[in-house]
Image 1: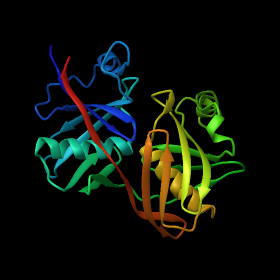
Image 2 (image 1 turned 135 degrees about the horizontal axis):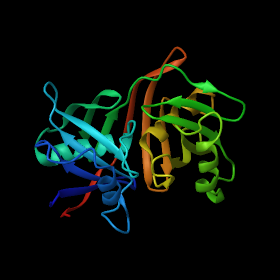
Image 3 (image 1 turned 90 degrees about the vertical axis):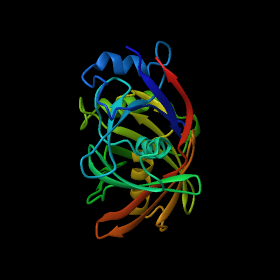
Length: 257
């Protein structure tokens, strides 16, 4: 069976995108999804995203990690599916779509895709890190030697360790650059490696850094190995609302496999 696909990337976080409005793709085939995401034996991606019909709003996003399993929310994937829907002519500059964590609003403006994230009600501050859920679970910790840190090794140890264990957490290492910008490197569960960028991860970092007073700004620049993202938000008691993830989302190529 031939499958038409599109490859998108958002600050180096790359995805196989498939128009599944006809429901022809077998979502239960974990091995197939993992193979399509394999960088040597398939197309190569951090994840696979299906765009599907929704009875009431613009479309539905179904996201799979590179290991073939359906996963929690992917921020950069959400921005890329908005760009994909615009490319297909389903939406113009604005859209509302459903993902695994609920409804999201998205806007295309000046070649950037802005994605509204879910409100964050609580942030856990622990001895040397913070933990919060921005659609996916995220461990956030400051590191002064971030440029030379072994992110894959350190991230894997934390991801499988207490209190996360098998379910695991994404792990973000952060270095403050100035009052409103931070360097971020992320180990992603499901990919089981460092990725060039993570949308829910940089969102978690921006909120966590504001929460502990490392920045007083409500718009934060996050620099990742794959490029630059921006997160804006409003503080809401002990949590945050009106959270937007902003950055580029680009079509790389189209193909058939």
